[in-house]
Length: 157
Image (cartoon, rainbow, N blue to C red; front, top):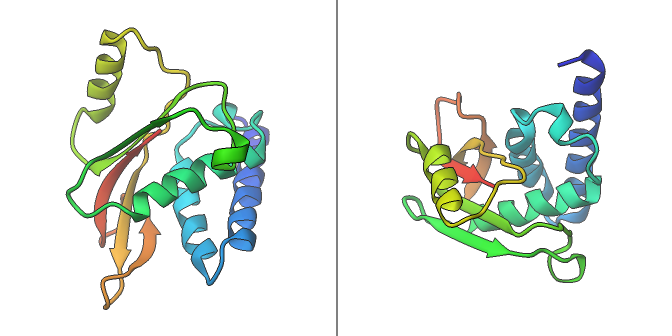
């Protein structure tokens, strides 16, 4: 990865996190911004830098809202065709968002199943995110997979 594309990616992620922090109420933006940083961390710059920041903001916010509603150990699958009017972002592709406990071979298994049904992948984000709760059991932090605390979730888009 060239330093220029890495810089563009960093600027794009900073722009997305700034939008999240500005638009979400009561400190929720900071938590969503932490999630966005982990979400996009391992995505190659060339998979992001030509995208509209508003669309990436909408995609990560939609996935964040899905993650926040998941009970530990639960698997959630959402398939939809996002429109700006309904979802706050748009895509010309059908979106499959998954949240499930992290385990080996998820990407291969999901990809093979989609291919078996005749679907192809346009783009795949598949971070592992650790979520940590506060003393009251409320979601407090989104952490990278290397963090020593939290519960690991596979988050696939």
